[in-house]
Amino acid sequence: MSARTSDVLVVGGGIIGLVTAWRAAQRGLVTAVVDPEPGGGAARVAAGMLAAVTELHHGEQTLLGLNVESARRYPQFAAELSDLTGHDLGYRRSGTLAVALDADDRAHLRELHALQRQSGLTSEWLSGRECRRLEPMLAPGVRGGLRVDGDHQIDPRRLAAALVTACERAGVTFHRRWAERLSVVSVGGGRADGIVTDDGTALKAGQVVLAGGSLSGRLAGVPRELLPPVRPVKGQVLRLTVPPRYAPFLSRTVRAVVRGSDVYLVPRENGELVVGATSEELGWDTTVTAGGVYELLRDAHELLPGISELPLTETRAGLRPASPDNAPLLGPSGLDGLLLATGHHRNGVLLTPVTGDVLAHVLTTGELPDLARPFTPRRFGAAALSEQPA
Ligand code: GLY
Image 1 (tube, protein in one colour):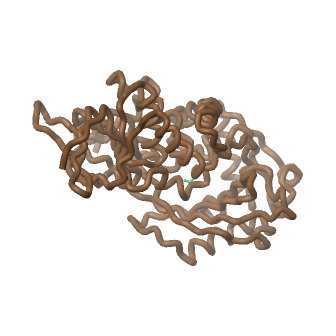
Image 2 (cartoon, rainbow, N blue to C red):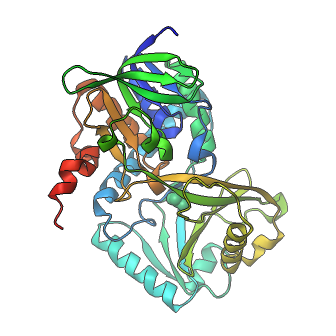
Image 3 (cartoon, rainbow, N blue to C red):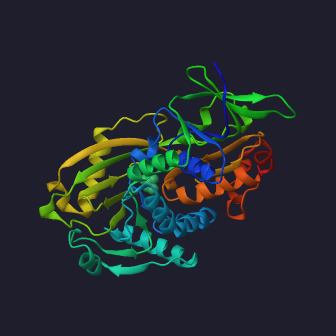
């Protein structure tokens, strides 16, 4: 079939692919996205917490810098996208309360508080009574908590829909097919020059961005040693509805670690209450299981016994695209013409603004901006791995 040409071809129409395409088109690049269902992917499942502070983990300080920078860009990003498209993104700056239900949880939360302070982040320790004063539906057994007013939320489904509209307005072309194979021409050390879709159409492009979420490591035609080391991490998520007579059930996101697992409840202004999430290494399985739903409800019920009154309106499972160090892979892949924007793991929604900016910069200048240098895909390349101490 005949070839169609663009400056940039983005493989994957999830929020990361869409923001990349939108920002590239805004910079004057002729841009196309290939995805059977743009606006789908993990954003259909994600709760949308912008949790740079409450999801801080030991050993992830480098990632923290990128997370904090993206959180800083969010207000302007959301305002621009919303003004341009007329979409309400459900962006809510109502903050987060991380609570402890027993002495072990409290010790864990105290450690997180210390790490946050060492990292220059703002959070406030509250007694159990102070937590319940903020959120009266909390269980009486809550032993203390961390108030983080800077961790906000957005509705990822609305974000994805707005990004599709923004792309359309910026002139991005959508090819609603699967990308089957990267096309590589053998000049010099080889160069990516497009993809072939599952109906055999050849789409040619000056640069290809692989933004396929957890599928990014599977695109045929990418040289084996350059395939991004991304694996799927399953998350099951529930949606409840708060009837008007119970509103406001929660005024901010509430989360805890219960029996070693994260549970969070994210209240939207429209009455949706998102409860997440399991974290399961089960390959490509996206089954919603009785055990997953049971554990989420059991843990959420310990935090907020009143949830048992609420209608359960949706259950879903999605796949986080996880990399070996939990940080994204951004920029040139090592094959000319092929760039990566994948591996965002737990932080895809949070990192959407900064990813769009970074990829647009690389696509137009060929250079990674300083803040993205630690996230070069080359850190996992064959050379980097052979430099690791045994
Ligand atoms: N960032 C929330 C999650 O991955 O479950």
